[in-house]
Figure 1 (cartoon, rainbow, N blue to C red):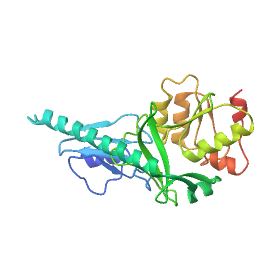
Figure 2 (cartoon, one colour):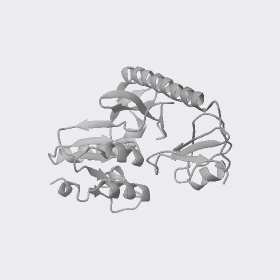
Figure 3 (cartoon, one colour):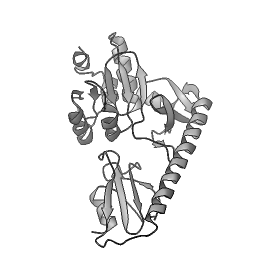
Figure 4 (cartoon, one colour):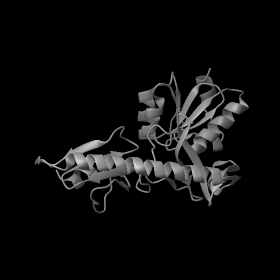
Length: 256
């Protein structure tokens, strides 16, 4: 099996292969986003679909060859990765400290007024153990991206009111959950995880978290792996969609 066929089998959409560096690409389940990534050196490679895979999936060709420079390539790759992470972290600090509270079209569409805005982009800080490592940037049209090279695995935005751990994928869902729970005088610790695969990572070490699942195949499968979950009564909806039409289901009962 060729590398291109291998990548396609796992849902990646690759127009042409770029060698020797990680490349972000669309996936068959989310063709309008760069939700997949691959690396290929002409012999070995790896791919990941961030919505489906917890870890990278390794590819090796049918002929194993010894590369005397492999250790040096690995060392250089790791150094490049760390350099990019540091650069992304510094850029995130600059963006977050430069951003201001302002109205934003994406938030208005989701039923909210103001958020952290920088250069017309809605800024969602991403932290690991309180340390800023990057951010998600959302355009007025709702397109989402991360900073090049930043750490995303294990990163989240936490909205803490000293209550039960609640896991959600996106910002709008998290804000809707917070609004509903505040109206019902319920405490919460909401973790915005940014993807289903990262939700699994954030769930580690959490005691009895409640998942607010998107009503799609990936969202349901992820929630079932974690434990107790809320689900809209309408396929294709997330909590924000349901909340905007006045449906919150049994979320309050789940927190009793």
